[in-house]
Length: 421
Image (cartoon, rainbow, N blue to C red; front, side):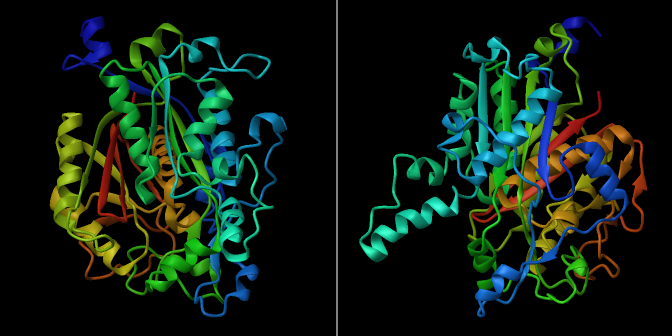
């Protein structure tokens, strides 16, 4: 293979992951997360503060409980909790990618317009949304200041990261609910692949607030075995009763391979393929046919057959319709018992953050050759397709290609294929 063939595929630039960072109940680094994954640590807890909402059935959540690092107030005054979580994950990703100076500042190269950001969340920070609400409910504007809207606007993560790091390239906001994190990776990959940018920060974040749980609760989609938090959620299990909302953030640094090789950057994996499409049928009920089409499009983009994929990280929300549709779509594409598991069984559904957190964990599992099981999965639902559901203590696998899938309200589907380098 010539050097040009190595650096490009089908005339397009190859895109690699040179860094990653997470903020998660399961851990703040791959090392910490792997330890807890191997310990089969379930992070679901009883949210006592939610007892004030008697009409809400669920009391279960997966909060991030560690203290947040301190940043210069002037630089983060427009950040609510969700943007702060995105900043922490991005700091870790940039450090892993060797894109920070010894004094903690980022390299000047990142400010030349050839670096961009793709980032998303379901919404901005709830506290600032409430401050705006009080104007309507009480006729009181005293809680609104110059930063209130900045904290609650949907693009708060992407915009604040751009200003914090003085990044002047392309900004892509992916506020597509549960595909926000994975879609950001995909769009960042396409921006680099097509020569528009050299480096992209890509990810998603979400803060844990009771209205998120209440929204799913009203649909009958939340877990309600409140007396035994450690048994929830239970993706793909016949006795599953719903999802658990989590909290966190994930950021990947994506980079043109030639650019990464020239600067001697660490390379964790290649983004081999990406696809996103829409069901076009229903806002909340998934469509297994269009989900399968999305997976096939990602495989086509990666230029590989489905038999090359050694493992699939499932969206695996633990909802009845979601698990059945996803499993059937996956089996339609793979037609075999492909090894599959759900990270949400450990950390709940982190909504806008899940796609990036799960992608980073999947990449590292591929590198280490060990894949975590799905917790609380004892009796696979017979209505789910016959996939290779990983249980017990996990599974050791040699994997050259892995897939990570996410599906969101609005009928938005995403699929990412990663290749071992």
